[in-house]
Length: 236
Image 1 (tube, one colour):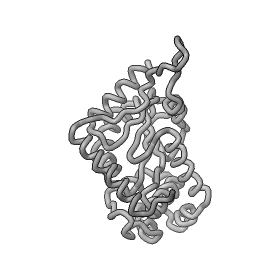
Image 2 (image 1 turned 90 degrees about the vertical axis):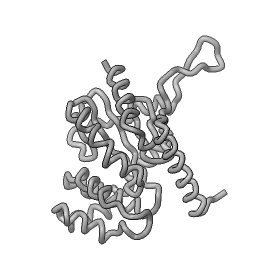
Image 3 (image 1 turned 180 degrees about the vertical axis):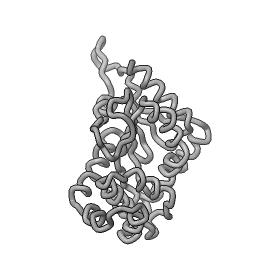
């Protein structure tokens, strides 16, 4: 049975409202804690397969333009985000800078970006544009610019022209940027990231994989510090 745009929008709004309530209450959404689950055979335990798969998420590639921090940092936090998502913007502009200061700059945590461009065509355009900026080693500058000046969702704020203007404002080679943004390899990478996130249990954004755990939503800072501190303790 297919769902129309109205149904999808109601689902997104419902998820956003749920996240607001959880954030206000300070309730963390943590999935896949790594605790073995009993099976139907006495004496045997097995891990949640999604939690097991999350352990293989870190790329740890030197020179990765979509990553912040040392490749050999003890913990990797992988983020799935959408540049149209207001809660992704909230995380990027308020919580993430403090996590970078406390953990990334200290060499303890590495942040790796993944696209989950599911809110509409403009999300896909923005994701491709950010990866085009990454080819000029300016992903994080472009990332910051998109969230700082985030337009209303699917109202024509993200276009090829507006994204090229953002690139120009950052001093990028705009002709190269336009060619790269249209590269099918970049489109494939955006799709692959979303498919990977779906397999790991990502159903909305922002979502974060820390070890075998999935942290869902723009949670309060203490939720992230608790997850990272726990992962650091388990890495020793």
